[in-house]
Length: 518
Image (cartoon, rainbow, N blue to C red; front, side, top):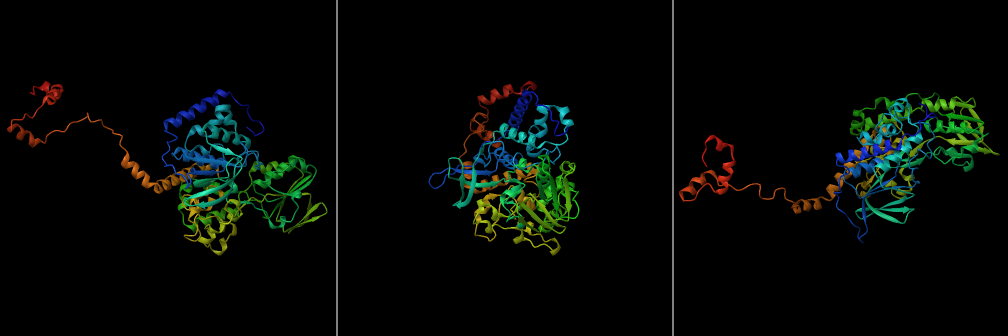
């Protein structure tokens, strides 16, 4: 099945049946567990949340589900976007279909009824599933909307976290949108996806260009306005190629893709080594191995999907220029003049398909505190041939995805922020943003947060252990019998060793049928 030949939605009762199956399976697994974390209040009686999840996209949803399943119920999920538009799927993502195979369980957290396949087949049937090639991007967002609804995950939309500050044992989150100016939480999970702990990568040559002539691939771009115009796209990753296709399909006069490399990358190296062992083993490797693996992946570069590339190259007015990295950009009248090693190029509009960079100091929430975060460049110095400035800016995380303070004792509160997004990949592997490993990462995250809470609240749990007084036995299930050598002593003192209860018990015993006297 192609993405342009989708089946019509099936009977609603089929999806209703799947919803019942989800509820039944959760009940069989005793999920979600009841809340076990002691309540806390701030100094003035203010409510303290156990966890606030920043982001209601795929990462935020599965992280929250893992926490709630484990009985960490006092949490909130905050997302700055309108309902149903969390994450990139209906905002700046431009591909027709997902790259990941349709069979991956994704955020299902080990439950078959929560997979995309179960959701798809409930509406369209098994035959259509067999015909489906790759998952259409908008359909994936429909699936995530259902996932949120069927699990009753408490996403609050149009609320943005503006600033994170320590306040005693807690974090104070300044908010924009909604009725609250700020809230307190014990832990913050930054489920910010590909944006991670940075933002769009804007090359230096583009910073002086006027806004109406340039856009990043993550911007809200009016492609219709590009009709009849010359467009240049910088980069050859998936986002660059998808944006080039959009411009062509909206009537651009020409689209030229400018590639710094001399040849097109063709092999997705990390896809070739994905396994149960890689997922579980990567984070326990030493720094040298983790750096080498991710450096190799960066240098070989992940190619754009085949379908996305064909979507561009089928247009006769599309051009791929290799060895043409942009060195300089200037304005000449209403034209942009780009200087490359292959000469100058004049164009009407520039799209930066340059991805995202990792730079904690670019996050407004961490303003004034980013320098306190331990980065890989502070922890590990690679061999000269493996030097890479951007990898060095990745946060060096603890095994619970939390930040580590650069100088011990200066900012211990950073350990209460969990970096569950793309920026965790160098430390933890591909388990906090990509579909294949997202459930495993969420399980690790939830387990680690639960363990921390139990340790921090151990006095309360100890007291609960001492106070617990619900009896298993009522007292009528047994009696205290005399010790064997006491029976003869009691008989010598004229006390019978067999009372009425003994006679009644022995009378019911099978041994009386064998001639034993009572």
